[in-house]
Length: 100
Image 1: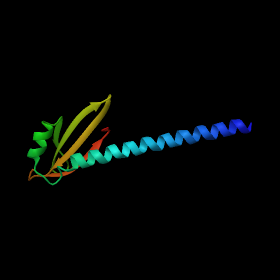
Image 2: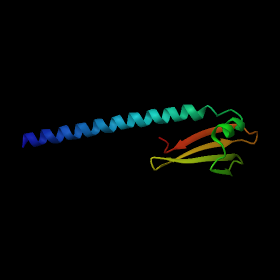
Image 3: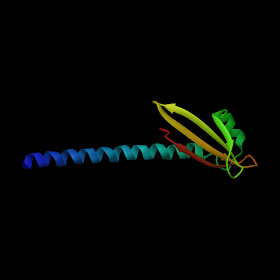
Image 4: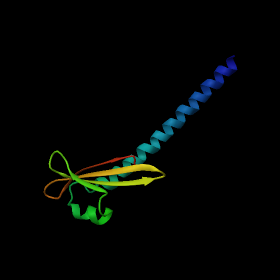
């Protein structure tokens, strides 16, 4: 019985360590994403349009700011990048979801 307990503990340990590795890799991808696309915040919209092209969707939010959504898929996983643009055509914020 003690051998079975030891094997279960080892299995759980390896599983938890594997989850931690995946989390670290995921966090690194998110950080790179924020650095790459966060550079547009505070800049005019023209550079964004040149680099990323026409957005998948564009609409006005509750603040009256324009929102550009760029939707893509990688490995079947949907990715959404959202840029909020004020009335002066300056990008105020960036966020992404599902991008790997």
